[in-house]
Image 1 (cartoon, rainbow, N blue to C red):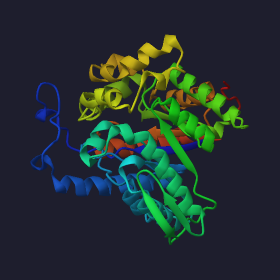
Image 2 (tube, rainbow, N blue to C red):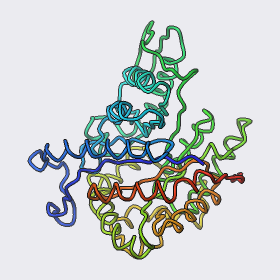
Image 3 (cartoon, helix red, strand yellow):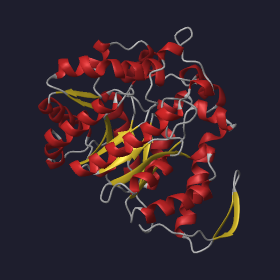
Length: 394
């Protein structure tokens, strides 16, 4: 199995003292931002990624989010470029650029540069994004799907054609040949995270692109997603393999599960109660109003599993330590408990790659590094040695 770290790079200072009526104000004004904390935060995370390479991780993933202390990577491409100069072997995963709000030709050029900077270590991923990002960039949520697919077509052409032209609904180009070109041909590997959208699953199957199902979904919903993905792959003459499925989880290594919950639990609660909802949950209604999401997007989920999915966003706001203890994505505990839970997860869902968050909720840096170190020394070798032999079929 392959094991990647995944870093949201949250702002390091906890912001609960700024809440009004239980919510962090959005937008959050400049006066609350401390540049000195940002400087040290970037430096410390670069150090942590270099440590992951030393410990033998297969790669590290960089996330894109905007206008919130939730994540300080408005440009994951910049962070990957910085990490490329601190690492020599690990894959660098952009996970991912928000295609609908960006100019795709510029992305194609930047990503080609990154593949050259890393000597072919880039894995590319992209997302549709969340409502607050469309609002900030002045992009119509109702255009999200069409922009997403058009941008990807342009990036493919820019990477693969000697010279290309494109006349689309949102972007048009004539007689363009980008320099540089990616090292990896015909293109760098591409993955895509899927929150739930049926259309994204169908699109990924059509393009033969691996998926990361359900960032915060239950095991049952993720199973439904993977089975539907397998059905869609089969419609295009393909058979699902463990390489098609990348599974996310939260990891914290301690003496036992009780100690893990005691130490890391408050940080995960901060993540869900404060960071995850910032400028986001209040705008979720816009998704259906604008056509960004509809009930048909998740009609492939089995009826008995839908309620948990539909209640999930509001549930995060009232999450307790007891909820964390029973959350299937939380692989916390002793090295043996973490190892076994990760292997069990991959065997249950047929995934051959793990994408692990070691710092969910702006932990102190020494706590973050200790978690990475213990996992790398006491868990990573056994997980990498495991082979997933069964896959989910439709």
